[in-house]
Length: 254
Image 1 (cartoon, one colour):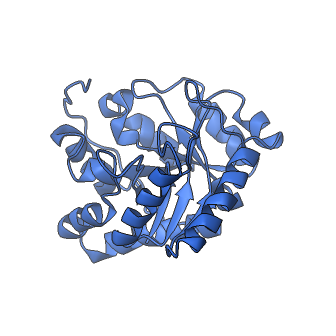
Image 2 (tube, one colour; image 1 turned 90 degrees about the vertical axis):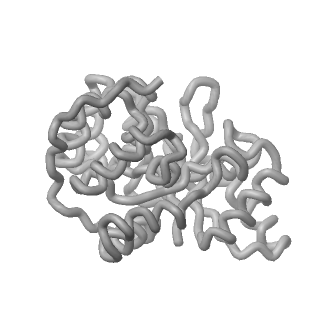
Image 3 (spheres, one colour; image 1 turned 60 degrees about the vertical axis):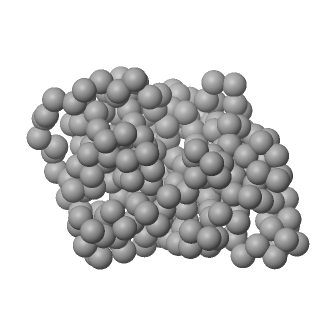
């Protein structure tokens, strides 16, 4: 199993704080059936700035340590980029790290807002050979209230990734229900852990796929798992035609 969104690199953001945290996370990941993790430290999110070369160096160091510890887990480089108007320039300057050097880049919105320039930015990214993957849209208040925003992004070529813990109800029942609606409407293309530690923000991947299998069957589960592998390899993912989510009243999430 491949996890395309995880904060396992030590000392870079609000994920693993030191090497011992990273090793604990690696061991837990293996226990959950994960063999490859895309390390995705925050970039330009509040106080964090983790440009490409910093990430590449840290990934090499952690892989060497995992080998010496005989932990059967591979780390590949990625980045969780907070959306900003200069993303294309950041990529051209070598500051943006797509997933494993592929065409896929993880893009994060704030928890409350989708900027108006997002549509034009996603177009510009695709013109420059990058495909945006919107991370945890199910936890964005504006998308919850206006799911057609996500529908339009996906229709125009973006992908989206839901968090395993959202599907298992760890972020609350309403976010779980909305996450399932995204899966059902073909507005979610993969599941990832967004793990930050081994306690309150762990992996939950196996549990999340059990939820998907029980509700939507084996095929949906396997497609999402396969999409994660295809992204790491830089290949085209499986995409069904997206559907609009019928508007329902969602309570605000604070």
